[in-house]
Image (cartoon, rainbow, N blue to C red):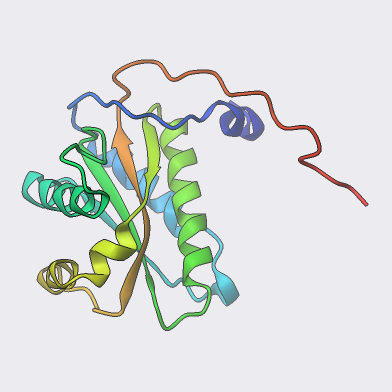
Length: 171
């Protein structure tokens, strides 16, 4: 599939099979994230792939509490890819956003599905989130930007909505 077709056919999926993502495929997807552009090449993002059920459930619970719900904000995906940035780097939000996009496109290219999930900033600014960073041996100055629920879709995604008129201006 050519790049533009890949971009046009990627969809956000909100229901996942419990099937495990093979380690070699996950490694390729995560590596794609490391090649995202970063401001001045400073590589501020940190990618954390959460496969361990204990941590997956804990992250899901923290996210749900922030939302004020009891459901799983990661829609049952077997992998949560957290993307946090070094808060001392002025472009960490932009850098991490590029990483998230690369990961979503790489996952689609490998036949997996994703959805970008928010509230990681609140999670990792909280005492519970800081405790997780410490437990994982990561610096406390990391700030959450977003995450990707990653796995095999439980049902086919819908087609894209038509693009808006006037979305592009060439001067």
